[in-house]
Length: 343
Image (cartoon, rainbow, N blue to C red):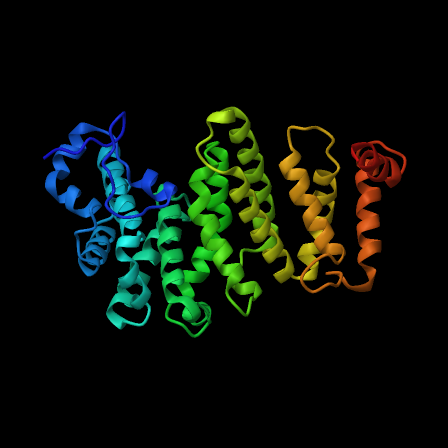
């Protein structure tokens, strides 16, 4: 049997799939589909056992091709691993994922696999397989979703998952920037889902969220990419930009509330400059920056300014610095009058 994946033909999935996972699992090329044959058909139908799939992923990671391997072989390996990551994250394996964190063998298997993949995707000297970062975050998100109320324990410093979760949290900005740079914002949805889930796990701590200084620029790039993609696709758009924009806002505000005062203070100049833009090409960035400034000033879940009693003074100084940088005599000309004009 031959699967026709890509082009005008796609293999129908036998289980519910989010659009981004279905798209990530779809593979092009009749040659590769022919090689996979009946095995791929059974896997896409959810027929493969969860433990078997997890073990196969671990074996594949152990055989990760090195820099000396031919590029064709590296791409083929990465496609196979990406497919298996998305498959294991799917609804077909939700029951197993809901129990995996409490089963020592399954937990150890997943932790080792995810740690190796995230390390290979974010290596400081140059990532070997950056395309595997997003599906790895998607699998970790599926584990946290399956854990339910126990997700908080997986994020605790004493958990066996703590190191891999810390690495994953730190890689979120990179994942968002990768998709924004490619002008394919929909691909960032698994990373956004993961970040939103981190914001929803109580109690929220700075350690379980991306660093504010790193995630703010990444989110600003992503919302801009979302706006451009939506404008290009027009009425034929097949996804909902509003959902992604809302996710970006939740991640931004969650990370902002957990950030330390020094990081918040250092970001004021950037937020003010972005919020002051008058052009219509960057309205998404302007709205996100304005929401963050409002949260700094006190419109947040705590109902208090994030920099204490001196918050208005800090913001006013940032406004004046932005005005001087733009060649305007006073913050009134850089901020208040343009806002009244837009209103």
